[in-house]
Length: 63
Image (cartoon, rainbow, N blue to C red; front, side, top):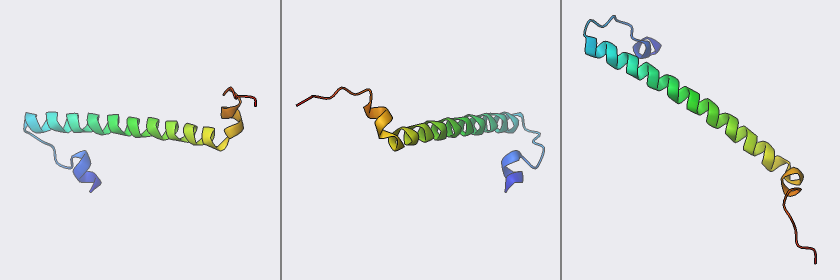
């Protein structure tokens, strides 16, 4: 299957070559996006695990 994604055969049609280049670029962009979202998600999970650090900056009403 990996060969199908990479392009096992050499395409002689310029349109197919351009489409392959565009698809590879799109895959690269999506991989970057997934990586960034995973880092953001990890950061948010860390903030949730440390409620004291988050709540320390929130003013409270003294009764």
